[in-house]
Image (cartoon, rainbow, N blue to C red; front, side):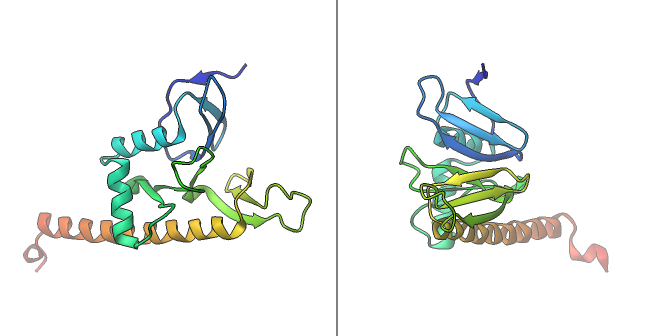
Length: 176
């Protein structure tokens, strides 16, 4: 019997958080090396991870809306300094929302030409694990692009912030 965890800390090894309709656990965590069962919902795990990285889920969500002008299915920069970004496959308020961790995705493939009619697409992770998805190839690609935009904007912002901090700590006149 698989052990059920009361909590899980999202980290660099987290590939996906999948909802589970089970009495004893609410999330199936896909980690790079294993699957875990957790008694908290995917959104609760995302919220806790945001807080541990210094901001609330709502704060991160509001920042991405402001910076990207996206309004729905907002990707969340859980911990930008550790490059932990996740995107929802549908509205996070929906039970069946999966959270996919951007930097673990190798590719998205369409299953339209195969016999997998009930799973129109699959996500292939960098460790070659394949996750069949009910969402379309187009929707998942769009979510990847939204997340890439978020990563680019926040990476450039953090680079500028680090440069300004470096200039304050090491003023230009010290180098002349």
